Amino acid sequence: MVAAGVVAVLAGCAAGPVEMKEDREAIVKQRSQARWNALVADRLDEAYGYYSPASRSTMSLQDFIRSIRGGFWTSARVDKVSCEVEDSCEVEVTIEYRFQSFRSKAPVKETWIRTDGQWWYVKMS
Image (cartoon, rainbow, N blue to C red; front, top):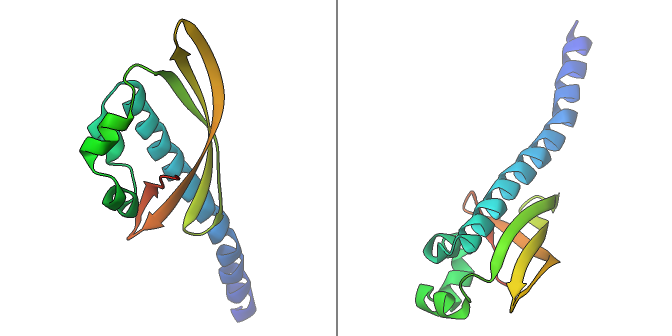
């Protein structure tokens, strides 16, 4: 009887990390999509709020807003999230943008990290 209980506990532990990884990936996918939705809609203060605290410490909101060309992005779709490391995820996004009179698509890769229990976008230089 005790052996059956130990096996059940161990089986539950084996399934736990997979579920946790899926949960991390779902959370990051939602946050990344929300950040891109804000960028597409020119809600730049909202988009800035997804940057990691370290990223925000090196770039003020005003500098961020000045660095963005309004109306550039027309849509964005988070295609894939991979969280192979517990506190870091890689995200693949397809963006559509307008340049002069041309519309185009491009892949974008992002890194997200977990700090103090929250997932943040990391600005790469």
